[in-house]
Length: 316
Image (tube, rainbow, N blue to C red):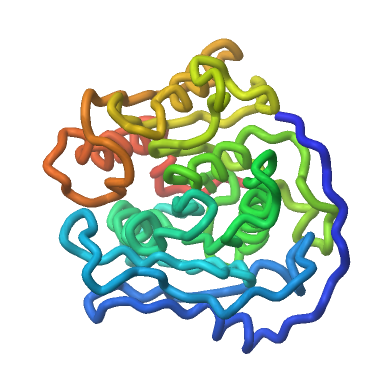
């Protein structure tokens, strides 16, 4: 995939303490805690020219959310971070997955499509890494994805640069995204160019994920012609193997997943698509009483069959 590169407006130094403070989010007492929460940029992210109000959770007390548990809806995210969830040592396979929550580039469904997914991954021996990327969008409708993709590319390079320190296999680091996070993950997986000028040695490390998992990905279709893939997406044979899930009745049309799967098949990239008759949008990891809620089992089968969950590490 080819994009026009954007230059960085400048760098401002942010303190490590401030970054960690801003990365805190409300969780219930029974939630698993991350072992690490780290900022991914050494200063202000590329293109940041103004300060937003403080980061907040926009969820209302009386809001009815899937599975009977509130969704954390974060917005005003200015300091992107990764929250690292490690599996038990006896289960650790060395694989890792960077998770991009959805939210229409307005908010991040941080627990619903983030931390809950990371917790599930740890049960399969995978290090789950939740990316808190910038929202709301910093750019006009034509490139609403830009800040998110910059953060995701940086996060992939950041995590891979930590492979030795975190005992990860650098050849088994994938990306997973829901809805707008699925767009973010997909554009990261299929892009050929970094969407910002490199800032340090971390950006010498490839951002390309080894595999991608896109759960009801959004915005890959043309707005005025949904049966056609958007023009700026070019999927080549260098794209990683991909797992896709969508419901046919999803108002965020299943054409996105169909376009991706078709393009991947044309260039010979292994792809698995699960298209369910019903299920709507935004179910995440939760039980909404639909067959689509079995997608995590299908994903586990796919990860196992493709040997992403093998226990031996690759040799650099």
